[in-house]
Image 1: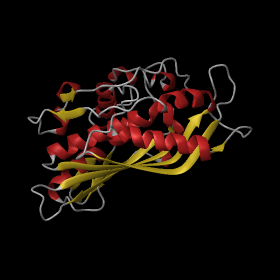
Image 2: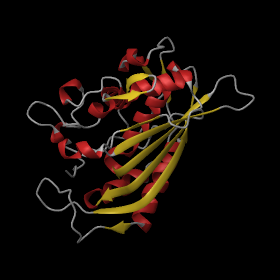
Image 3: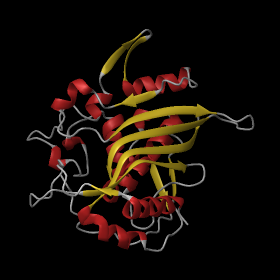
Image 4: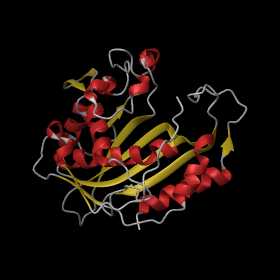
Length: 282
């Protein structure tokens, strides 16, 4: 059975049974009909996924892995903030007439900063440090720039990716781990999407750095289920759990900027039916 399913079911059950509600409070999100979008939430959720054991895709329903990879490439490889550079339509609600989401996500990754050894953007610096100083405790990207928040159409949710290298004496290669910090998450709409995105990012960065992809640790400050999602979540977590798919990358790719979604290989992905017509709070 998929361990990602087990973690998802446990998290959702805990939120529904032990969470607190925002009903009656002043909340920013709203439904398409204009009514407030309230949530049941848990503070400080932490889930661990070991990519050496299995790829953390849900089998309760299908996660569109190539689309998830395309978005993570949009942010960290193409460093774009324009939806016209993205194949899916998940950002359409937050784009202006030109397709821009403002100074958010890929825009922040591409901002160049000065270091003693040169000028680098955030992703280039990660890749350089993993090549030259892999045991540094300073290898990260951070998308939450306070000075630019007023020019972002949506504040970043998953905003901080911290890379950390470990190596056991018996290991042939170092292991690359990733800690993802997320300030807020719509659990039904986005949880496994974000998990799979950053699992793929970890796999790509590990491969081009000559390392093994290890643990993805996902920390969520505000993990919530919207009021109109609760019944859907109850049905979803009651479904049978299947075996996790095998997910790999083309081993010939050695440059992070050469990856495309064609390099993602997904085998044996069995899953339950897709959940349709999920209302999205905006």
